[in-house]
Image 1 (cartoon, rainbow, N blue to C red):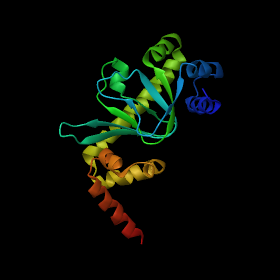
Image 2 (image 1 turned 180 degrees about the vertical axis):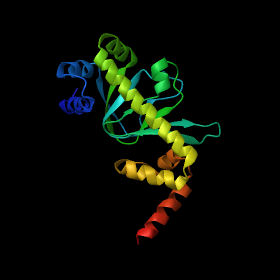
Image 3 (image 1 turned 180 degrees about the horizontal axis):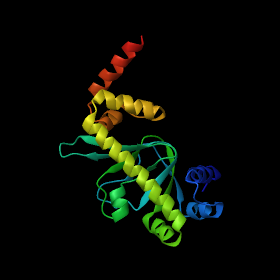
Image 4 (image 1 turned 60 degrees about the horizontal axis):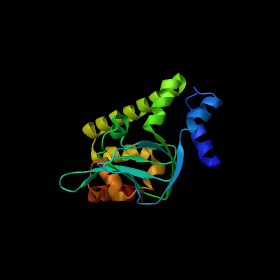
Length: 198
């Protein structure tokens, strides 16, 4: 594993203010560094997601495909974010979604077996993993409520406000799918906002 990857994950873990340097080292040693090419899949339906992934460099998109062939973006991940098919990862059942690289990327991956062993043997590492899971759950709830209560334009504005560093790196179709609108409708919203500025 490169020094850069170790340092990035170390810095992420320090934010929780729970682990000492030795515990951070133990956790990081459970990971494997992998280089991923643009358009390469790291999770596919029908195959069990044996790992969850920390993004050191690059960008990823997870999506599902409906019966009519249209795809629906479920999440994104850029540097310092995590991604997997979590239902498949946690229960070790076949995945139901795709996870694809949007850019050439570098990830650190940890297997479910290694993570469970760490949780069983180190209470503080278990607490960090639980907090990460809680943050992910809270994000999904906010997104669900936003989809139910806000207009498409309000959802776009909120995403732009919270994740400006992500928007420029996403294909328009993927962002539209994530926000629950057509690519054409997203274009209309963007054009409308551009006209307001001029």
